[in-house]
Length: 132
Image: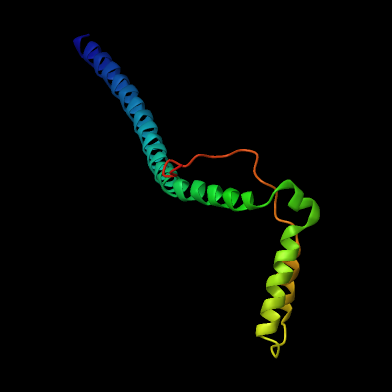
């Protein structure tokens, strides 16, 4: 009888160890998954850092582009003032280079220059480094 009690105790201990082993395997799998997610978060953080490092130059470019459009008034969009400026520049360039023949790229650039500029932006973004 003592022998059967000892066997029963060992079986319970074995079942307990199997249960602990299964829980340990689950914990290991969860920690491995957590490790992968932390590595992905680190990669994403590096990407966000790179984007934020470029953000100041993006805002500055937007600001400069919108400021350059301030040279035109609403009346200029109606009359096409930029076209007359471009024609004047092209005529001066043609006088300087009367012997040179125009390539298709020059023609495309000239046609693109005659298109009206984009309208001013509706939203102004203040850049911290701008001095007013």
